[in-house]
Image (cartoon, rainbow, N blue to C red; front, side, top):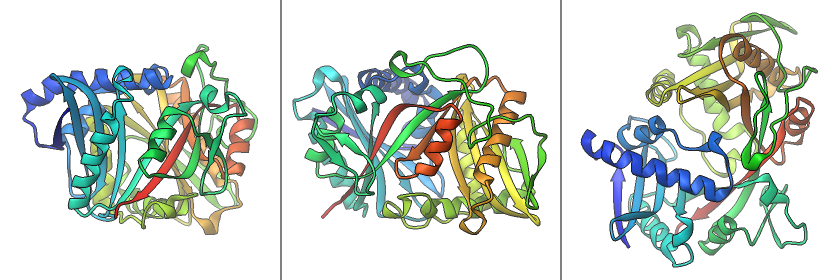
Length: 375
């Protein structure tokens, strides 16, 4: 197998255009093999961004494996450039018809070797599976997560590959979906996505105005698009806290460094990919104490994906997480065509999962987060 390494920005525009369709089709084939529907298919704008965009904070690299010119395997790495410079978030995929010939191992080994040469020794990886695969046949052998909650079927293809490659299952996340408006739709593998409840809960909806008093002297501010200038530093601080304060994050990363420039760089990346961010920020005496965000894309205007959510530890216990998401979903209902929202939560975060259940979210998939230290 011929292997080519491509760093973000390496290719001229004509080369990117030629490669883009091939990568999108490859990623779509991998997604279908996993059993997920079109809501999780790659978006050309996002793929292009990974090929061409690099800034002072993050970059992407990909490794392409070809046999007789045909793309049969692909690996990739998301790299932080301003902190966690010994970490790489990696993935590997092989077309179904080309599996069980050692191609994935060959490609992963090349990527790990070259990343190690660049000083990246902490590998974080993930695997995804539909809810039906996750729960099928309870008698199957399972691998428990080091975080202490949840397990994955050991004989599942992606799980077996990670174990064979020396990765340790660190944590499990549940991917859930709910409908916030519009006609009934389907999630992965034909599983209906339920309607969001109007009862009070974490992911409910409310027709609240943009600047809503949340009680207890907290105020919720919502906006779509770039962060208003007066809130950029608050969002930067909350994102920095997010890097280690959410369940399991400290096991995978050191605290990230965030400032206004990095916030703007992230917004520029999303805008380049056709993304639109809806944000809610909790304020107390003008200080940002919690936030949540949902991202949607022009190429898939009816679907949104939950991004970061954090309430600073000293302000928890006031229901701010629920209030933030209530306000954000209200803005989505009022100002966008979004019909359904996907969210990801750590399996050990039982409080958040219980609120999601009451709010009408149902599991459509599970994600295994893996860790490996290179010698």
